[in-house]
Image (cartoon, rainbow, N blue to C red; front, side, top):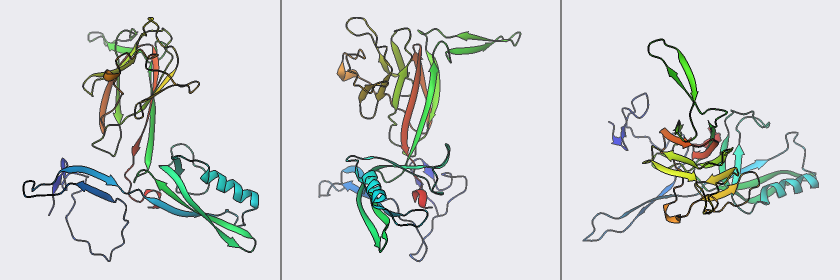
Length: 307
């Protein structure tokens, strides 16, 4: 037995065929995803309910911390830990590594959750507090993986192309002018197959004070850029564009950059760069710039760091 769903089947979703079977309640399992089906009601004239999608119930993790030498907390240590966990009033990232007490080197498995610590309690013994028990509530049912990469489209760096003479086989390298598109294919990872990925984009080194455009060829050729303002001036600051939250900041001083500074006159036609998941996205860049792209995507590993 098998089935087909969402463009795949039990025969081809992974390298080995899957079998449809019944699993009784006696086996060990990890319950993870809990989604609420948002549908309307049915009537005589509406036998099929309206479908409004799904929402996730937010997961909570309750764990404890104790000192690696098994000694009780001093008063100063307890105050420091409590302030560390409870000072943020808004959600922020917590990064969890599964192996050992030491922070891992770059490239190790890290699970990032976005949320806040909602409660703390302390285990008490005669010598003092031996540990803190905390509850963390995440805004996502899955950990997030962070990806970032840089596209060097500067004249001093990557704005070059190689051509090979078909007769002699000789390869020559030439610089691509800033007013010609620099082609940058990039593969976008995501375990959320039906949602766009909205990155944070930092545009740096606009040395020539020329207009900069980033054309998302894969997304119907939509364009995001830095244009001349009403006075004909082009922004020379290093600007960070948060495409998910629609925010513009000066990346060197973290001050707000206005739409007017970007030369965005028609607010209704603003395009915020977005990527199609699980495929190569092709960007065409005009300008003498370096572009750093960063984004987070849900990593749908059931059990997170637990299994």
